[in-house]
Image (tube, rainbow, N blue to C red; front, side, top):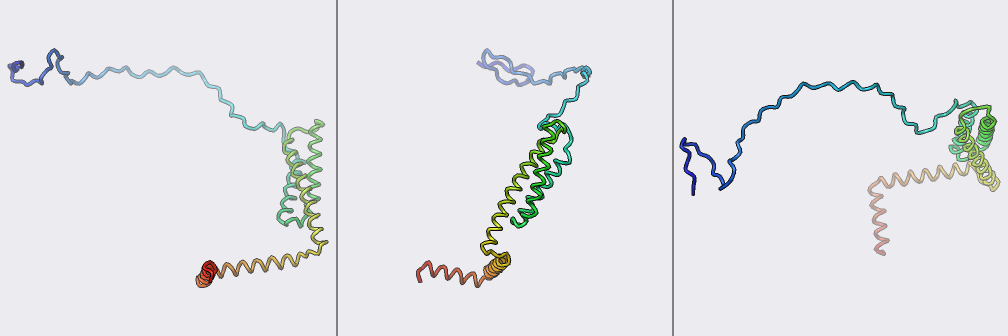
Length: 192
């Protein structure tokens, strides 16, 4: 049973039996907004302290600590760069660094100095390592020299080995030589 058409000639969509009328899509009225209200003034904030990751030094680093660090580091550098041959120079430098660091640590323990304990400890450890490595290098080099080892012979052998490496590099850059080496290796593998 169909509903009769509206008398005005307008067409309306069909409705389900017992259903509600279709929704009308009309623009909603725009809401009336109140002007924005400024937030109340906040209480002044106290500046936050920056996070502390390392305990700050309580006093300046002294000259003894700086001397211990410089002497021990330079001693180790001389020893490493000379392959142990500068043990005659690095041993006194390490010993002087040891003395400086030990004096600073004793001054801190006695209360005559403040701060720099960690740097003094670092200088002491580096000085001990320098003394130990210097003594070891001295023993090794004196033993090698007593056994007849010659520094000139070592230099000559190193120069010869360097020249051999250069020759190999030049020959490996040459494609003909490289092909000859490959063919020789293939012949060995094939059992010819």
